[in-house]
Length: 401
Image (cartoon, rainbow, N blue to C red; front, side):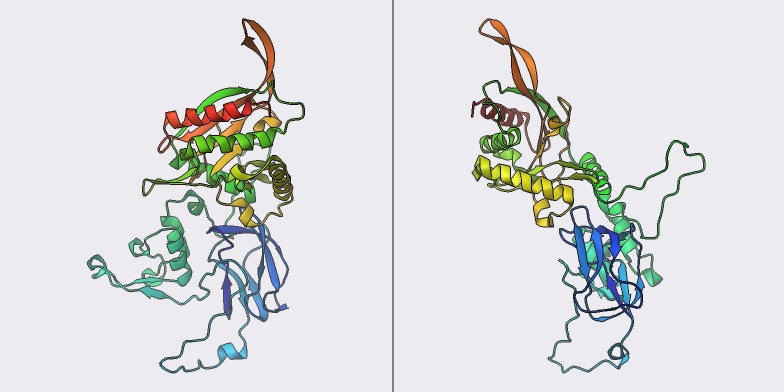
């Protein structure tokens, strides 16, 4: 029997949810034939067959969450699989293992691999025994596999050992596909327990990660836009102003690594825009905001919003933002405390435009104003940098055009 494990579907994601199977037990599949649609926190991905064969077993049902590296499909053994292994000359390389056309690869064998001891502390303990998928997952999640006490036979390190050891909230919440949550008998009769899936599950994990790793601080102010021409593009003006703010204070267009206590400043401004969908929150990314004109920005905003709501965006459109914008005011709300999602260090929230009474030349007038809420990671952004950024944003927004 050949066993195919769920590979990395892109961006180092640790899990995916089964949307639908395209095959059934007993079906004969060809190489690269779509087998299953898997939904990650970012996109729906078709997983193709890694080789030709007959389906022997499917691991999971629609709605089940599968960990990266966990069994997905079993194939019946062919005559070639049961034949004695071919011998190779001393200098010849063994044939390559067939892989499906999915981004990233995960070892597909259940064979136990042992890592060589590299320092004296491990000398007495000997070699660490682990299945290949666990070793690969540990590498991707920065877990020292040599420090784990395996729960498998004879101390074998398994996928569950790696997932249990990691400090990542996303990984620690990965559950086997067969696990379920059932409400207790005394749960309120007003509703049923709903297990978070897909985008809502990803949002819960991201917010937990932010809570545990970011020292957030928020400042508030308003931009007077009474001088705007009628029909001004609200979102595009905000994007332009963010570009101005990032040029004034590059420290807010950055990533911060709390482990190494280092930050990375970026020259290009990649703004992630929070898009509300019925399934949950998605954050498509507008590239190179500082070097695009208004028409190009508007076209890109329209494309990304439509793709987010139809769940048709590729993973490349949902990664590597260097700054975030929450334009919640198009629905309701004046001020907020937007949440910074690491490794980014800042997010700007724009509230609902309203008419406020302001003092003008000794009198009072009613002006349109945009409420702004800037949250920043105070571990690496100073208060002075934050308010200078916000001041530059306000100055640009208050220009007539």
